[in-house]
Amino acid sequence: MDKYVIKGGCRLTGEVNISGAKNAAVAILPAVILSDSPCRIENIPDISDVKTLTYILKEMGARVEYLDLHTVEIDPRPIMTDIVSAEIARRIRASYYFIGALLGRCRNAVVPLPGGCNFGVRPIDQHLKGFVALGCDYSLDNGMISVSAKNDLHGANIYLDVVTVGATMNIMLAAVKARGLTVIENAAREPHIVDLANFLNTMGADIRGAGTDTIKIHGVQRLRGVTYSIIPDQIEAGTYMVAAAATGGDVVVKNVTPKHLESISAKLVEMGVTIEEGDDTVRVLCERPLRKCNVKTMPHPGFPTDMQPQITTLLSVAKGTSMVNESVWENNRFKYVDELRRMGAQITVDGKVAIVEGADRLKGAPVRALDLRAGAAMVIAGLVAEGTTQVEDVQYIERGYENIVEKLVELGADIYRMEEPERTLDKIG
Ligand SMILES: CC(=O)N[C@H]1[C@@H](OP(=O)(O)OP(=O)(O)OC[C@H]2O[C@@H](n3ccc(=O)[nH]c3=O)[C@H](O)[C@@H]2O)O[C@H](CO)[C@@H](O)[C@@H]1O
Ligand SMILES: C=C(OP(=O)(O)O)C(=O)O
Image (cartoon, rainbow, N blue to C red; front, top):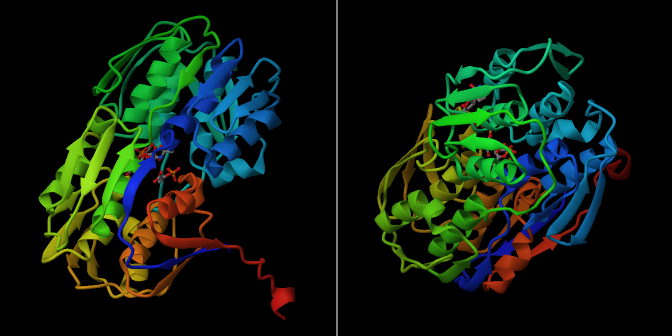
């Protein structure tokens, strides 16, 4: 139950370095088991989801060695199992990439049903539809999903009924060593999909079209170990951009791919923020008051759903009435709005739409991080609010943000992390 204590009102200024992308790293780490020799992964973010995945890899038998904080070498050759037994795998979403990767490696996978942020139902029917098309059967027993190729994995045409990041990547992982050609239609186009395809292609795969809605994968027999550097985190960068805007700051966000940030920059510009793009930087300059604007989350290249809580928080201190439409997830992704209201935000939620009446100010309060991005939104709210905000349950935030407290302090924020001894019933009683 550790918390962040934030004294609001400090203007963020200076430079912040963005870490490697969580949602690329969490697919690339399981993908390493497809290799027949060691891989070196650079720019790996130091976040708890990555620690969970390296723990799972070790438990499966892989040799995992950190060369420094952001470089890990993984030798998958000692892995002798097709089962992910680690209890911890249930906590994160990305453990489901072991299904595709194990199918590619040994045609069989037994993996716990995944966890991740709780947005209500998070089905995996499209993943399973893809595996079946590639020649697999599956069954569910005691929270474990077993998938195996009946004869051999073979290429197939797969049309995804919804644009899904997870199914696109998982099918890619299974198809990369299947016999023949796999075509994924209506594929997701997020930057992490391109990054996973680039990683696999560097290993010797034949994947074309990643980043478009049709991905073609010619199966190959073997993939070899490589050194690969993960792309910068689009959502971490967007979060600091919004934090800079919220505090009327002047921040250079470094080590980014500006192209990946266009949908976020466009909305900030609409709100009156100045954005200056460099080769691998964006400078965010803002003088309040901010203007209202409407936002609809969409698959890439639309506005990312993983930035929805942060932009809603920013709109809660802009002038006028804005509408935020969540079109990727259910309205469960608005649960954090109750926490923002405790700080004085005037937001009503009607199904998948939040109506945000800009308030003059927010007021510090004790609030909870209900999930990763909701937690980031609470931090942004705390930075703008009058007085002190305590954000509880920061373990969710630390799933995906490396050193968030240190990075914000460096920018001039008044924030620290308070460790709280676990309050068990016997201690309280
Ligand atoms: C680890 C990771 O990369 N997580 C990201 C990934 O989650 P994740 O991969 O779980 O999200 P998806 O892109 O798969 O989900 C998008 C939509 O498709 C639906 N769906 C998905 C799969 C399926 O088999 N059937 C189905 O109906 C979901 O309910 C949701 O409405 O993409 C989401 C959408 O950008 C992000 O919010 C998450 O941060
Ligand atoms: C929802 C997210 O992650 P996950 O899918 O891992 O829960 C996220 O990164 O915002």
